[in-house]
Image (cartoon, rainbow, N blue to C red; front, side, top):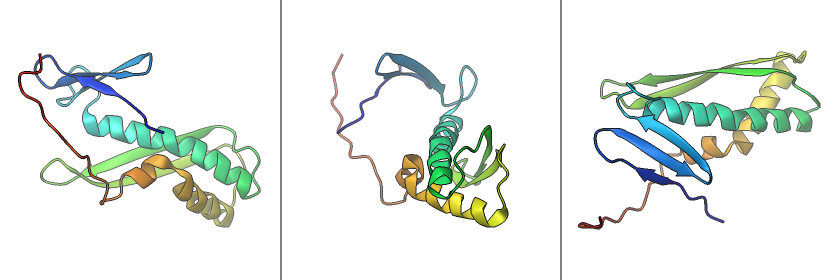
Length: 131
């Protein structure tokens, strides 16, 4: 099964992404829309929420209630992502040991967590005079 997204940029550094019937704008400069790293961090946090909920259910917490994740991406001197941290807050009464078990399971379930591994690289082709 494949997931398909079409990214189009007419000029400059902003791109429009067609995702099924949805359109998402990302601006590498961050001037007119979220920048690329902010978009990645938002996708990461959004993927982690259901992973936490399922991880909680599988570790004895049926309902985490409200979940809020403060996602921080630290950049290196080249403005590339160096590290990511999550400050996770949940409504449910969860002790430290259970919370760690939920996080460990969420790490196994989160598709973005898996996708940011260093050996995943895009295979690229380029076609000139295409338009």
